[in-house]
Amino acid sequence: MNGRDRFLAACRCEPLDRPPVWIMRQAGRYLPEYRALKEKYSFKEMVETPELAREVTLQPLKRFPLDAAILFSDILVIPEALGQSYDFRETGGIEMAYSISTRDQVDALDSSGITEKLGYVAGALKLISESLAGEKALLGFGGSPWTLSTYMVEGGSSKDFSKLKALMKEDPETLMALLEKITEVTIDYFEMQVASGVDAIQIFDSWAAACPLEKYEAFSLSYIRRIVNHFKGRIPIILYAKGVTDRLPLLVESGVQVLSLDWTVDLAGFKKEWGDKVCVQGNLNPDLLNGSPENVRIEALKLLDSMKGVGGHVFNLGHGIQPTATVENMEVLIKTVTEYK
Image 1 (cartoon, one colour):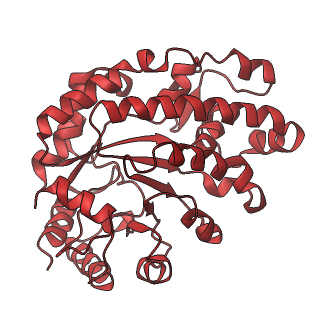
Image 2: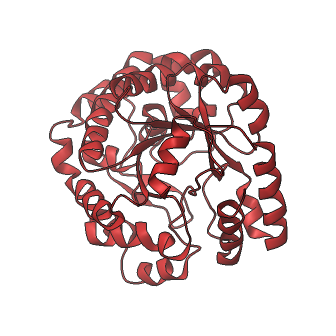
Image 3: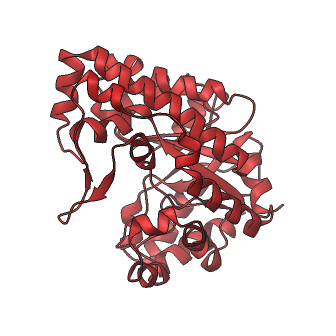
């Protein structure tokens, strides 16, 4: 069974001799070949140049026997295509061109021609799909409307989301208009990804925990559900939401095939309770990849053993791999999973 078949079988909750494995942010700064490329090109140049995006996407697959590749891109290509560009602060984090606070600003966002504006993504996916030749799964992705709105309203990365919370309280109609517009273009964007050869799509609701539990359905999950329902029966959708142990039952009912859970969740316990409704992805603590290789092996085996005999598990970290992770630890991790029986 090749990597693509293994991955898709896990998304159907079929029992396997071992789970498929890929790692969130598996391409990036922990790889010396990525750092060498980054000395020549900016992040956005690599994202927006199909040949470079293909090269970066495939870098980890040349080193490790992974079962899937995930497109090298960013969730913020959607706001940029709408007319709100992004960049990176010298001190770290995201800086948007401006922050959205009024209905006029929402109405001014240009949702026309999204697939043309993001044609470089389609170009990269087609090149990657040709390189994989059906042997490995190809994953596309995007941000949830709520998570994208956090950057668009805050004007970049935020620790307290004060502007967003104020808008939610004082002018919820404007926030919902923004979420509506993001949802519509995200569906178009994902349609383009499907047409370009992806085998599954991951939605990142990374800032789900910033939305109060009592408002999560209205301001986040309802929009995710619309996206999921649009693609129902056509392609697996994976949903990642961080720090949301208080709303796991809501996520189960979202309609996604696979839930990607952070490392604070007991994966085996969750699967035992909800396994007939959803497959799971995760959820090793990414901090382990900064430590000793032996500890990586021990903890990975613990997770694998806890899920032994359970259908519908895609092995992954409980969040993205960190720039401080070592290549040796990644080698040990992937070897431990791929040789597990």
